[in-house]
Length: 117
Image (cartoon, rainbow, N blue to C red; front, side, top):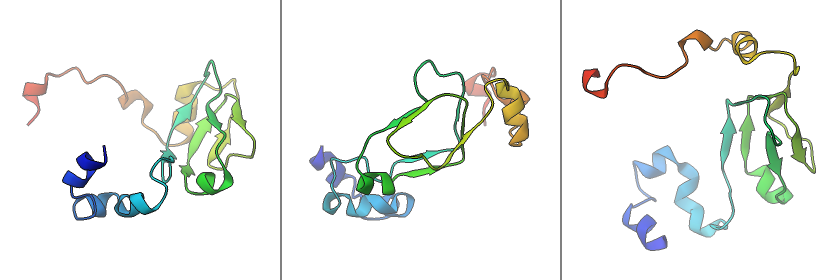
């Protein structure tokens, strides 16, 4: 895998511009899930916990966790910042509308790929 990533020239633009933390990944514990982004999600009526974080403090501090909604269990040994706990009685549509998400515009794109310009 290292050879593959080196062939991509990940330390140079456009990769270093789009993923700044990637440029230094080999010096920053490449086997750990550092700098992962968990943002703008709605975890509604999950059969298991919405998120389970059981990593060390150092790794947890390097995750980007923001603007998430859940009415499901959060399984973690510490408070998970970036998650707003919401009422189990609210529907997904109600939650989306509260956050300004155009719920009625979300769904499967029905036009064919060939019609997209």
